Each structure stands twice: as structure tokens, then as C-alpha cells.
Image 1 (spheres, one colour):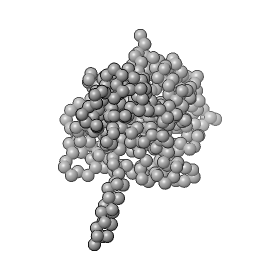
Image 2 (image 1 turned 180 degrees about the vertical axis):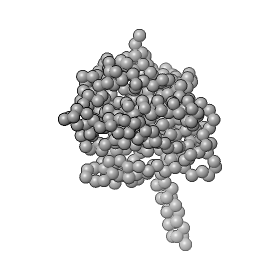
Image 3 (image 1 turned 120 degrees about the horizontal axis):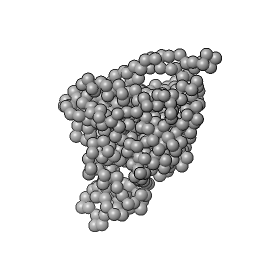
Image 4 (image 1 turned 90 degrees about the vertical axis):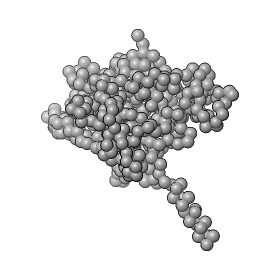
Length: 433
């Protein structure tokens, strides 16, 4: 009997230990603003169709033209909602390209959102979320659900990219990312104008993108494309009308843009914008990066965005020794058996839940300040200690070991727990005159 009871207890413990925690719910050592907000979260899905778009991968050099086709874009929308007691949260399911020649790898992610829950009444800022090359919004619910609980309507686009392992497919996401983001933003703004968008206030818009999505949101935010740079590499000159000086460049602008978050943004290595292009970004900008990013580069890929977006009030949060995978959630159970699948999600040096929690905290402070106008959030972004390792814990210390730093001269950044800012850097530059 004792053996049976012990075995049962161990079995129950194992079940609890492996139960998947939704990545939108931060852990015990998360900074203050990472925690979920006061609202329940709903999720709905729709499909937006943009007619008559050039199929860049079917461009016929002999004819000098690309066939036209309607482009369907599924969009998942997370929003503040009234969630009934006992309502079952969604489990997200999707695929990512596996190591060739294997078929796509399927995975699931636990969520807190309830499918089609009644939206709260209110006017919540609209956030457009763009995933990385061959990615999916299901891998970024850590951010989408978290922000929705805090009073944002978050629209995650399924860009349906070609397989990232096939280099021939690159022109499509390079062309389509800014066009998709602008189209979805304009379409949702139009729907909200008809009273059909879940309480979104489309006069206050933020853009967030990871990797290729980071390239897309920067371009839509005003980083004009260099017509002699990356835009020239798209077959048939299909991108040149949207490049600097092009007849259609103005179509990318989004009314009401208040802030931009670019996580490990791609682009500089493609000679996409140049200093003149990046100087066109004027909305407040938060860049999140790993200084060992081997995919898009840090000194020659991400840092130039921070240096050259001179007309934006800009911040750069750096995870020291982190790589490129900082925009994805923790690896789901189905993606932990092969290194290729695992590296879609995880970082070689950092705990992934820590990366997500720090990012949730900083993004919340930034958006609340810049989009909602909550002036008190500025204290979470203001520090005279650029490198977190150089900061001091308050003395005398707070009564509780788990307390958050109050911030202040020479102290650990406001809202971080004891030792919580180690390995981090926070840079800020005001806009040039």
C-alpha cells in the first residue's frame, strides 16, 4: 500500500511538472510589468483577401511580367474579453519547416485566450504583429496574449512564407512583408470604422515584428527602401514602386502610428534602407536584440538601425550573448527531439522564459508610455546604468526578498527583481532636431 501511494504521488508530481504553462504567463523571477493584465483574453480568426497581387516567385523574365493572384492572409486577433468561469482556453496548433528533407514539424502551444469570447467594451489600441521568415503567430502568443490582457487588440498575420530552407523563395517575404503589414493595418482600420473590430481604437496603432517581420514594420514605419539596394534584387522591379521616390511608396504609411517594436530586425545586411532610409522613421522605436545574433548580425545588422534611425526617440534592449531566436516562445514538447526544431525557439545561452519575461516587461512599459500616454511608465525606461551588471541593489534592501527595484541613480532598473537585470543593456537616444 505504501509503495502504491508513493508511486501514485510520484506520478501525480510528474504530471504537474511537465504540464505546459502558457508562455504568455511569466515566471516567478519576471520583472514587474511582465505579469498578465487585469483583462480576460479572447481570440478570433479571420481571412483578409488582397486582390490582384503580383506573384513574384512566378515572375516570367521572358514576358517581363508576373501573374496576378488574390493573396489571402489569415489573421488571428487577440483582444480584451469577458471570459466565463471554467471556459476552456485555446491550444494553438501549427507547423514550422523541419530540417530538409523532412516534412513540416507540427507543434502545439498552450494559451490563456478563449476562442470567440465576448469582447470588452472600450477603446483599445491596435497592435499589428508580424512573425519571422517561415514563422507563425502561434510561436508569438507569449507576446500577443500578454498584451491583450493589458488592454491592447493584437492582430497577428499569417504571412505563409515559402520554406526558409529554400533560398529561391526569399524575394516573396522581402516584397510582401511591408505590403502585407500595411494592407492588414489599413483593412482593420476600415473595419473598425464600421464598428466591426472588437473595440480597437485604430487612431492609436503600434507595429511589432520579429526578424523578417522587424524588417517589415520598420519599412512601413517610414524606413524608405533604397531603390538601388535590396529593392533592386526583387525580380522584375516589382519592389521599386514602393522604394524611395517610387510612385506607390506612400501606400505603406499607416495613419495613427504611435510606436514600433522591432525584435532582431532583418534588413541592414540586405542593403535595404541605408542611413537615408532609416532616418525616415519618426515614430518612437524599441529594438530588442541579442549581441551574438548570427542570423541578421548585431554590429553590422541590428545596431545600425539604432544608430541611423536618428529622427526617432529610440531604445535598444540588448541580451548579452543571446542569438537570433529571441522572438519565439519556449520550444513546445513536440519540438524538443531534434536540434533543428529546438533552435527555432531556444537560445544557446539564455533561459527562454527569462527572455520572454524581460521583453514583456519592456514592451509593456514602452507601449503604455508611447501609445496609451501613461507618463508613469517612463521611469521603467529611464536609467543612468546602461549595463545591468553595473547596477546596485537598493540599500537597505526592501523587506521582501522578491521585491522589485524602485529604480533611481545607480540602482537596478525600476521594476526588476534582485539580480534581474544582469546580462542586459538598455540604450536610449532622443530624436535629432
